Amino acid sequence: MNHDSGGAQIQMARALKHASLCLMLLPRFLLAALMLWLLDFLCIRKKVLLKMGESPGSPDDPPVCVSDSNKMFTMESLRAVWYGQKLDFLKSAHLGHAAPNTEVVLVQERRRVRILDCMKGKRPLILNFGSCS
Image 1 (cartoon, helix red, strand yellow):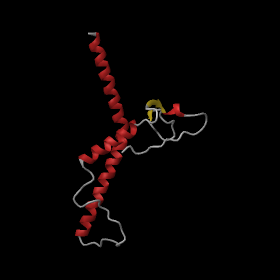
Image 2 (cartoon, rainbow, N blue to C red):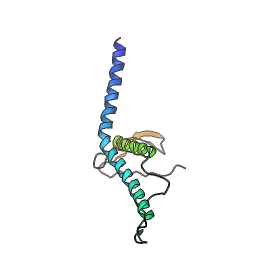
Image 3 (spheres, helix red, strand yellow):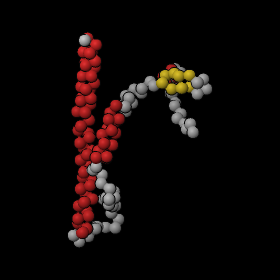
Image 4 (cartoon, rainbow, N blue to C red):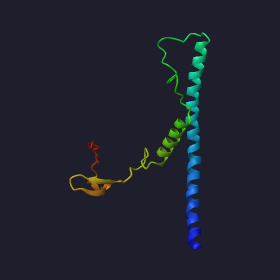
């Protein structure tokens, strides 16, 4: 019986964590969704005005629409925005904060160490990210 209540508490904690994350991300997500909707609205407005016979503007004006057939405000794009916002929020590296001390593999020695273990005194640490292909 005690084991079941512990599992229920863990599930409740996860649900609360997920709900708080959603509440924190919601304003950013809604702003991005509004921007996508406005982009679609501008495209539709431009098409309507062009059909009504108004001048299209100067030839130097960039096109307002991304595409005639594809809309920006779709469920797929909203899912991508939500996923991107969630990934950005949960990342471990943040501008202006200390860098995460992640695990890396030393190529010559083929052993795992933490990045800050490679520091020598007050010398700057330079990481070279190369291609493995």
